[in-house]
Image (cartoon, rainbow, N blue to C red):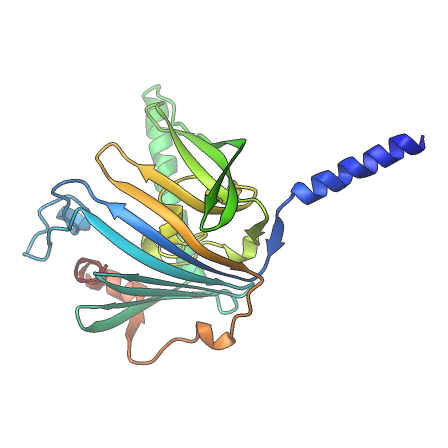
Length: 288
């Protein structure tokens, strides 16, 4: 009986050690390398990529771009600083006041916009309504709308990323055409960020959403990993590629409250006003 209890205690201890530590505070510095498709042009028709741009506002992107990002997480705040050749972006999420502020410094201009969680929820509701309408339309045609959840396949294979021993997990996702795509992620199994510290922020375009727009890279299921993503590469059929590497991770870091203060000198407006006046498109065409 004692042997059985001892074995059970050992198994319980092993499982406990296998679980990542959940931290409320962290500083993460990462590098993202982006390869764009040939002839990629931001700000195409309707503000989308790959078009002619209209009114002479678009410009041809280089094939490669590198962004260095520093992310600060606490239970109440999140700040993401992104530096690239095209400008600097700062996203500050204030979960106490339920507000997200995005600052853009590019081409000698300091502009910004803010949005509330309530506005973000309204945008989410509109998006859900559009998806439901699409699902209903397909159902009338006898077609099935795929709502597939990502599948995570863990491996004991290891690799050093910035001096940290990481494990590999493969995320499989199926598109609407049924084609399955796979992404390999190397993660640090020793810790993960608390859910409240990675809550999606209220700004558009995925800036700062989840663990940070640049870290998500369009890969579904990253937030489900039992650990912290340290490296991954995502490639699309048109030649678009993102390679993200965490350079340094500091869980349980001491972060000064002043880190999350809004700096002076920026022309900050409500996001809704900028969207209605076309200012949002102007920022992203002339900024990052």
